[in-house]
Length: 287
Image (cartoon, rainbow, N blue to C red; front, side, top):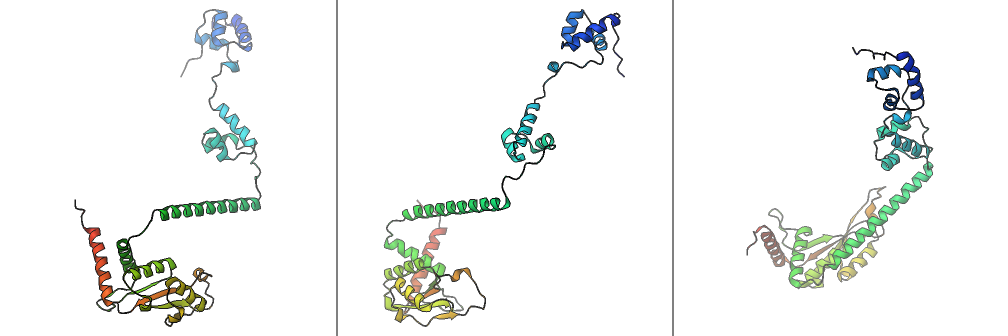
């Protein structure tokens, strides 16, 4: 247990002087210089009960931040905004300003919803513009396609989307079906490269009964160059009552099926071309 400070022998005469100097704002060092040599214990006894002057206290580094945080809170800032401004933790901010009233909402609920909606619209517009830009830049990278390149493109395209021969279902003929007009155009261009004339292309629609069959037929006739009157009987699927699918909009024209007559030999060639492409993909590069 620490011992109590031992008073100075002249305690009674020095005490009033020490107190007066303390209250005048002097530090312990300054008081010791005025009163003469004093031990720490004796000086402490002389100054007992007298607080040190404010200027002698070591400043707290966070006092300034605390004051700034309270000022910002009074101005209506949120915890996150104060944190970003001062670089302190939210727990510290909470301890410093929790006694202050919570700022009133800056926006009404309706204004908040409107602001959110505007932000979403801006985000979608920026995303769509980025998509268009990237698509355009990529499209510019494709120049003239050679016949050899088209041959391989068509073979890969057919093997991905066309019907294939199986050991349990012999289908050695070219039959291709798709709903993308651009893909159909590439396929028809490929058939032309292979020497397939329009009269060998048997076109038929696979479409839902909610669509305009006549309009869809003329649309695909324009895409393929095959007369609408030469189209085969369509395959029509009836929608269930209450069906409201998103792909049934004004641009819906079903799928077009193109069957090439007398194409067994051509089918075997396509299978061989695809096999050559696949073999190349797994063959180690040679010098």
